[in-house]
Structures are given as C-alpha cells and as structure tokens.
Length: 490
Ligand code: UDP
Image (cartoon, rainbow, N blue to C red; front, top):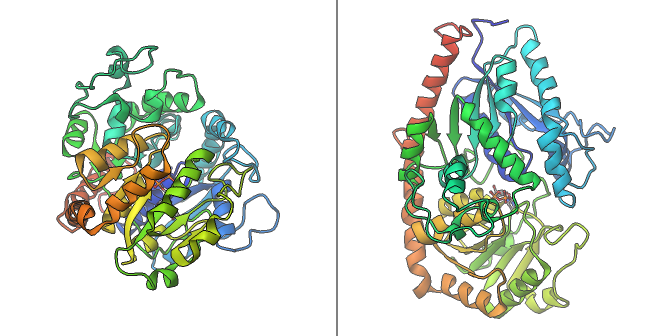
C-alpha cells in the first residue's frame, strides 16, 4: 500500500561482479544523500567475499548470511540505506571464477526467481513499500519484476555510453553484416547514431564473435531487449567524454550521464567493497620517486593466458621500471595459482611488489605512480583519469576493446600494448618505456591531466554530471507523484 508521507524508496540490485558492485554502492550513497531511502541487495556470494576480505566473521553457519552490514558506517551519518542479501542460485562456496559459464547461466535462468521473492517481500512490508528498482542493464528481468510490483525501472549501465549504444543497436549491426555472420564486413561501422566510424575490432568481444549461442550472448540479447522498457537509464560516464554518443542516446531514451560514480573521498570509502583482502603497499611506494612506478592490474574478473602472463612478466623485468603488480590468485585459473616464471620474484629484488589485491584508488593516487598497465575495465579507466595516470592498454574481453579505443584513439591518454592477440616480452618492455619516459610519455600525461579536469568539473555543483543527477531526481519524483505514491512534499 502506498504511504504518501514516506521518502521515495529505491531498491538497488547490482550485477554480482566487483566492477558493478563498486559504482552501485556509491550510487546508493549519492541517492541516500539526496533524501531517498535505499534498499541495497547484494548476492550472498558477494556479501560472503566482502565480509571475508574484511576479516569479519559471518554468522558461522556458512551460508553467507553473515549479519554484517557493509553500510554500517554510513548509517552513522544518518543515511537511510538498508542492506540485505539474496541467493544468486548457487551455493556460496561455489567457485564462480572457475565455473564462469555455470555462474552466468544461473544469473540468466535462476536469479530472477530469488529476486522476485525478496522484492515482493519488501514491497509488501507494512509501512515500507518501494517506488523504483535500480538494476544493472545486464540483468534480463528488471522490467518484468518492476512491472509485477508496480515499480519504475531505472537501468544502471556501468560501462561507457559507446558500449551501451553498440549493444542497443545490435539489430543495425546484424542488418549491415557487422555482427552475427560467418564472414562479417571489415569496413568501418558508420551508421550508429552519434558514433563516428568505428573499426569492427573496436567492438566488444561478444560483438566480434561469430558464434552467438553462448550464455553471455543470451544475457546481452535479453538484457538489451529488457532495457527498451526501462523508464530511465543512468550511465557511469561523463557527457564531456562522449558527447556525440550521449546526445544521440538522449534522443532515444531518458539517458543521464552521472559519472564518475566514486566514493566521496576517492581513496577512502565508508563502505568496504573489495572481494579480496587489500594489501597495503603505500610504505614501499613512499620510497620511490614521483611518477616512477608502473601499476599493473587486470581487474577482478578477466583471466590471462599463461603465455601472455609469462611475456608480460619477462617484459616487466626487461623494462627496468619499478612496478606494483596486482596478481589475483586466479589470474590464470583458480586451479593454477602460481603461474609466475621460476625465480621471477627473486630477480626483481626491491624493484617490484606483487600483491593479490589492493585499494586501487589509493595506489593510483599515490604520487609515485606514473603509468597503469591495465586490462581497460571501465572503472579502472575512470579511476586512472581521476588520478592523472596515463595507461598502457591490454584488453582481454567484453567492453575492454571498446574502452581501449576511447583511451588510445579518442582521448590519446595512453597507448596500446599489442595489436595482435599475443604479445611479446620485447613489445611489453618497449611500450612500458614509451609510457614511462619523461620525453615520449609527457604527451599522454598532459592529455590525461586535461581530462582529469573535465571529470572534476563534471562533479562540481554546476557540472554536467551533477546537473544530470539533479534532473534524474526531478524526473523520477515526477513519475512517482504521477503514480500517486508520494505526497508533493516528499
Ligand atoms: N580494484 C581494486 N583493487 C585491485 C584491483 C581492482 O580495488 O587490486 C577495483 C578497481 O578499483 C575497480 C574494480 O576493482 O573499481 C574493477 O573494475 P573494472 O571495471 O576496472 O574491471 P573488472 O574487474 O570489472 O574487469
């Protein structure tokens, strides 16, 4: 039953991967800071990993339902964020990294049943109710769940607008023979509204595959069918980064660029989100000259092949540059947890530090960091720009190829490691030198500093992202009033 005197209430459900949970948590805080009540729903698996990383004890029954509330610190500042968990359909102890296809199949086929149950319970709680559902665009069910419970559907897209529009216009790519064909065209794609001609190699990995029967393809097809029914789309981008693409999308949907969505203090978050324990390398970094250290990370999720890992390791050695390498224990596979070449760490001495996970924002914003060898995850790119750190790009899958194009060709804030599928140690060493050298690297540093200013301006009170968020808040409150859920003073 609608209660006309309560605050507008959002239910937020992030995709259960690190790069989606992080911005969703900070979106929840932004909305709560603007007077919304928020219920944030993590999967039990994400919750379990977060709590384990924090070294907090779950309730001991092993089902991941530990009662720890990741938002406990923000409650102290008076924000109304309620926290709960839901099953993704698989046991908490299941190795999702090793069994990626099964994990994705569960999100495709099973997760929505659990979501329906929990959303139904929230909506039916006396005195509670809810007005809108904010769910990741990759979910295949939000518009149906929202409709069933009389909620508005706000789709949250955590990748660049360029990637959104490529998926949104998949039918055009098909009709024109650039996608889902045996011998796809190799000439530039010049018919996506607002997008300058784009090489097929710059599309996401899924759009470059000829076999489109995978679970991930089904997720993309269904998710982008479902988003057509979204009432609003929030995108973790900045209008000034992708003006043409954003303008064209705004002609088709209520599309708001509200990025970069970061923790308030950037390096210090009131909410713990890391899925692995963070190692602190700040003391080691303090001993290094400004701009001298390369940060190396391939994100939370992608795997490197063993040959690539070996070439990168040898290339790092050859480069003579100091580095911090975040090497997840499952970087090759959770069944191959010691993939570095024999004697590698001994040869490095004090030149490098290798850790399984870190607070990336803290590392990137340390003055010693002068470059980032990255897989081009979208959060990593935004965080690197915010820290004024140019990039060396080694995309591995999904949106990372398109993101590289933005970094290397459009913004010129970094360079590409390799045009071939495989890289060599000489190429790695050579590109690291180009990025880190005072002479050849200064153009990238100047360009990234200029872009950093644009991001900072976007978040100022009259900046584009602040205005878009303001507009979204006005628009969604209007829609909620139209539905008769709120009084005019809410
Ligand atoms: N990250 C982190 N510590 C690390 C590596 C990554 O905190 O050691 C964070 C990083 O700051 C980013 C997220 O994990 O917010 C990774 O998201 P991204 O989109 O860059 O890549 P994905 O993991 O989704 O491929």
